[in-house]
Image (cartoon, rainbow, N blue to C red):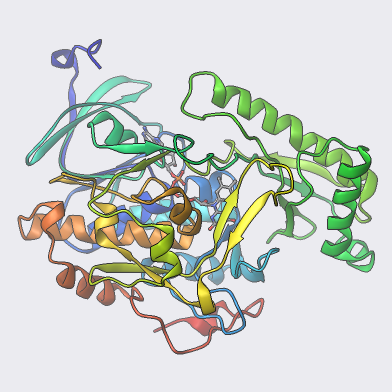
Length: 458
Ligand SMILES: Cc1cc2nc3c(=O)[nH]c(=O)nc-3n(C[C@H](O)[C@H](O)[C@H](O)COP(=O)(O)OP(=O)(O)OC[C@H]3O[C@@H](n4cnc5c(N)ncnc54)[C@H](O)[C@@H]3O)c2cc1C
């Protein structure tokens, strides 16, 4: 950005590892980086709390379990510790996905904000909230200089290693690493403002037919034009808080979140649709007569924007072939779940399952931006095609990516190795020591409502 006069910007810190973005990927990357070595780790986050999408708009981790009749638990390590902490205060339960995509781990997002804080404090991660990456002055060899903005002004951070977990690949964009923008090749996934309703009479709702009845009411409302709902489907599920429902139903298509003005339009459209749903629920769905919206997502949910080109690109074929590679650093068994604008005669969400309830391995190279020596990318901007991303974007997987990237980054400092030259077997050994699952387990998981603790590997 030529308009910044770099020489006038003060240096606020010199760190070993800088993690950009404190979502599920970034928070895990920071914890894994600090726990794997004696390094000075800083995490910057543009908002006032950690968790990103996990606390901004959602309440269910998918991807811990494979779908199907013989579910397996396939993600572990530090992500388990986070769920165990939620479980300690009864802030978690398991529930089946509305569309059969496997068991979700529903949690209290407000408690989760504090858990992320507490974990960072305990681990000694230097967290800076309300601090946004706005430019990269230099990214060569063993040093990167990032420019961040905080209400106190512009500041520089000198870092030996960078992990880009911004969701939008902001660092990779500013440091000139190659990427694809969602929508360039295939239509981008739609955006969703989530909302929560309180005072729902769940007993009455269940007696009237529950989810099946609600689905039918939605379809009737759309067909008969009684309520201008944007889609015929959508999930409304019970929350940890009694009598509260979390809803993923809004659908905003044809807007590009990285285009000036379009994210504003999307936020406004998302809120408009949320209140159309509120009226629909109150008027049509037994049990919702006295319910009201008590919270809209902090940010409209953006499913995909920039996807970095890494040393390897995960493809749909890899997912469907259940491909495992020598550098597998996490597993995924989630179906391709492609939310898109409904074309004539098409389902509004395209589902494609991994054959036989199986899994594929996510290669380490998908976390290394092509040509990079001192940087990594993790989370929803990792290196994958549109289709593969539609499978591998659940939060258990983005946490798994953070765990792998943070561990690799720490290893790279310890062994004085570039991100592209890490010994994958050494990395896998470190990940297994952390508890990561890198081969399909034989044991069937307990997916009953309060079964989380029965899946613990001590
Ligand atoms: C509507 C919707 C519904 C979904 N439903 C589910 C679900 O039910 N279960 C599930 O498991 N997954 C779900 N997903 C997918 C999943 O939530 C995301 O893929 C995942 O949370 C992405 O994690 P992340 O850490 O990569 O990114 P994010 O969670 O987006 O985190 C990125 C973080 O970086 C910060 N940031 C961004 N830019 C900067 C910057 N320049 N400087 C500093 N900080 C920055 C952001 O504020 C944010 O905290 C859903 C996604 C959407 C959008």
